[in-house]
Image (cartoon, rainbow, N blue to C red; front, top):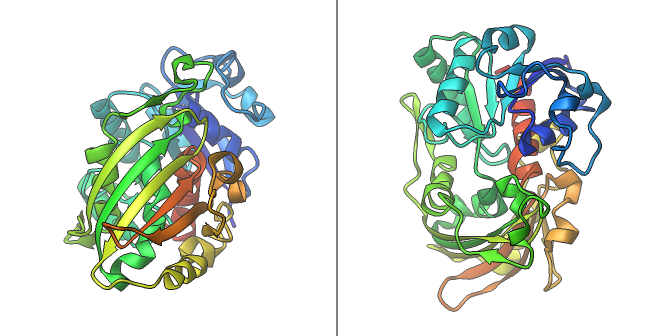
Length: 360
């Protein structure tokens, strides 16, 4: 496999730092440049993150002496040095949309962790094991942008990856009809640690802005949509209602899920489907793909964030406590690592898929 030169836009933030750690020893990707706001531009990456390094792993040696470029002012320079960029910037939504389109129009593919383009109809929002066929919309996006190489591809919200993967192989087979989900989301999903957010210690906040109607209820319908006439049309079912809470966990988004079907399957049938489910990343043996996508635990007290969110380097999804419900057909617990599978790791896996499929 050829090696690809990679840039990270928003490299000094928590997700940007996670990208740096993941790319440091990646078999396909070489970190060539890092970019951030004008406040950090001109510094070495080590100096720009001094006192702000949030990862448990030490700052990779290969990144320390990279000069931080300005994300907005140095677009042409960055585009000329890399094969594609990861985007993890912390800006207003309209500013992010404009910045990512500017990179795409500079013929630099953008693999984004941001939410700004998730509702753009010709921008694929990819969970690699679930909807890789949505990459077909890129050719239509390129026509709109007037580009040959440049495009934008985004990952979904981190929280929906704790339940959508389990629902996906059941959806069409049994006619998934209704879903109720309550998510219990770790503080790193807000870019925080307990040191930077001490009020979260021993606390639960029953609100996460934009995560219920805008993300947890609507994003799955785009993931399950179809590419038609150059855009992604939303799926009409299932009906989803969500409640999202911030909890005192550092990493790991958990979901309590209730589901009903038009044709009710047996519990053992569901477990077997989850056990056997593989996606295109597993078929292609992509470097970041978990060998077992969905891990089901029979123990009544699993999955747990502390014990299980790092399964297969944080890239596997966990499920447990599948059982009948009195108002829905079944209920279960899901778990995913929010900054690995849900954020930077999921974007790296998407980039591997884009490279393997010839889009980059």
